[in-house]
Length: 259
Ligand code: PEP
Image (cartoon, rainbow, N blue to C red):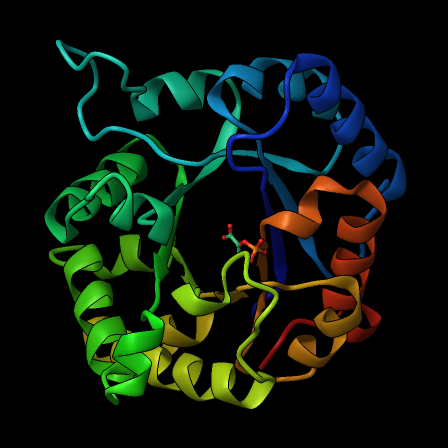
């Protein structure tokens, strides 16, 4: 029912020549990915260049953020309409680096999710607890609050167009990872909440990715968990060979979907 997906988050990396080269290498290594969908999210400045490289390939283009308005006096912002026009199919929203460094609020993230959906972009809504929150036993409370706030007010038909990424903040860029069973426990909890927000059937159709120091040597163990539907990959997506291996290891066996 759910085909795994692997999303490369290049963050603020990739001048034009590097971006083209990396996208081309990923395209060459994943000509016909089986049992996995693959997306690349370069910085805004490289979107058009990477769109050209990916044209005609099954790899999808995505962005790392968007504003909720269509256009207007929002200096430095980029609207979902602009991203859709460039060929983006998805947009990462509520990444912890934006929640923490750019002080994005749950309400802003909710507006972004709704705006992305209006422009037929698939939101990849990130949720995750800090190390301190986990230590205090607040993991479920935190991810529940972020999930409910980010998806508030969405009709069931829009809910199923969203992808969720569970990204424990303490695992992002640190080399630490949640164990596959720790991640699966949170994914199961999130799926239960998605059933409440929509229906059991719609919750079964929504992908929940894991993110946080996913590397070629641990990707396979996450993929074995039925509740984990792929990966959001930061650091390791900057090396074509690593990202290609992660994508291959995340693929559902013999092209089958999960669940
Ligand atoms: C991320 O940027 O979403 C991420 C998970 O980064 P990393 O893979 O480097 O931990």
